[in-house]
Each structure stands twice: as structure tokens, then as C-alpha cells.
Length: 264
Image (cartoon, helix red, strand yellow):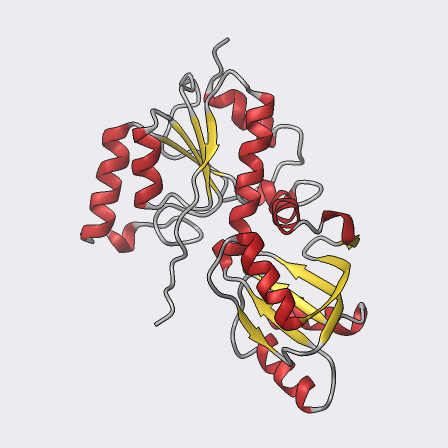
């Protein structure tokens, strides 16, 4: 049975309310192309594109954009050698790339959040699922133990922590991607009596500075920042599992990238 790119796109978005302004687009690619293999990834990095081509996949589904901007504007990159080399590779390979960002977050529940919770082994501890955050009660552990646990479960070498490492935490809020900013994260501490917030990323002078002041006042608040990709890649791994189950006739897998930053 042949499956076209259009079939996959309609499956991923067709049952949901249409989002008028969305970055979820197929470019490049022809919807009528029959799929020879599917790859999911956090981002269409040069490495991921090369691996997809080597694996004879012709549909790459990514969460973030190809060319370094959320809204995928590329005029400002014309003439840049990195941009030109990557664009040339994609054009030569005839690889179709679909960005699955807004609709995957809008999915009920948020597909990216589901993937992260599954990877952490904390799905059963969710007390409340909000639009932008999950509220959990986890087995008691110190902030330091939580950080080590997260590193082990996500196979990452480091996280960034604000707060008292010896503080015990049970009530936890989780926010993925760029949701760790002050207006999204800070209110959760008091609304849900949280000990710890775990987030992807956000401005360093917002939530981390709040935690600094809270600790100085003697309050038990802590923050663990995972990194944007580290918080969202598990959701794209989960998507590969969903698609592989629905379309067993198509070779489907998730390609992980190495962490972008190094500790020096």
C-alpha cells in the first residue's frame, strides 16, 4: 500500500481546528509524493538531513525550522555560505520537509509534553495538564537528585539549576520549549505551591532572577533549565513511535542530534 505525503499531513492536522497563521508548512516537497521513508527530528540540521538522505527517507518531519528563524524568513541569509550549502543539499536530495510545530503543541494533550513526560517516566505523576504546563507530584527527591535523574533519563550531560540543591521537591511544574519566561513560569510557583519548575529555556533575567530572590528570602523555590532542544526532542521521538504504529509499511524513525553546547 502506497502512502503519500498528503495522507500523512492530513493525518497530523486534519482532525484539528485550523490554525490560520501557522509555521506548519511543507517546504520543500510535493504532497502527492509517495513516501519511501519517514524521519522525525527536533530540527532539520545538516547532520539530520544527511542521515535522512542516506537512509532513503524522503519525508523529514521536524519541530523547528530549517533556516535559523521561527517564521522561516531566509532573505537575510542570501549569500551566506552555510545557508547556501544546506539549501543546495536539500534541493539535490529532493527531500520533503514538513514542520510540525503549532499543531503538535495544540494536540490534546500537547504531543511534545507527552513525549517529555514519557521519557522522564513521570506520566503517571501528572496532577493537572494545562495549555502550557504540566503540574506533577513526584516521589520526593532533592533538587540535586532531580537534576541527576533528568540527565540520566534524557541522556544529556548537564542541566542548569537555580536554587538550593539540597532542597526537597515533590510538587513540580514542567514547561517545554521557550516557555520558561517569567510571565509563564513564575505564577505557577504560587498558584500550585511548586517546589521546582523544569523548563526548556527562557530569558535568564526573568525566572532565574525570581528564584534567586525567593531563595534569599528563605523560600523553597528552584528551577532546572534543560535547554530548548533537550525539552522538545522527546516529543518528536514520540511522534515517530505514533507514526510507525499507524503506518507499519513505511520505515520510520527518530534521529537524535548531539547537544549543541559543550561544557568548557
